[in-house]
Length: 184
Image (cartoon, rainbow, N blue to C red):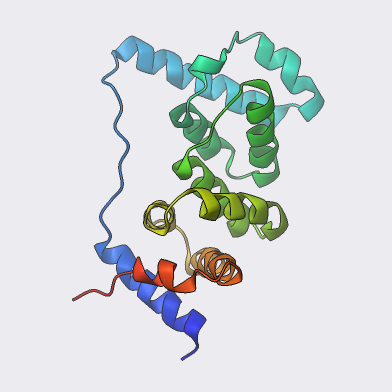
């Protein structure tokens, strides 16, 4: 059994027992939730139905401000645009440049998962490198496990291989394996 296949086996086993990493949100009234859902739907429709050069004027009409643009909002938009990973990536870059968006580990892991799952390893690599330099392996593995639970085995294998390769290139392979626990 190769190291990569052993790591994949351990990773898949850990999915079944991994504790779910959750983010806490302030309770929102139904009106605020409705407005946010509506905003997510409007933004997602613009992104999926219009050319990139039309985004600025159309998004400007929504009167978005930087304080509204949270990781939670972005994750919802990312969920809606995941079927078109190029759009997801372009909007990620657009949001960072135009809304001063500061992605958290969960956003970055989700974007990496979408990109790698679509075979877009080249644009995923700098995001993955940034993740590994910024966040501890336990947090990255936790968020990736959440993303991988619903994915198929080919995507899981691709994502895990890329993560392990990135850690290997940085001589941190054992750090990530230490965070993938064997079931008892």
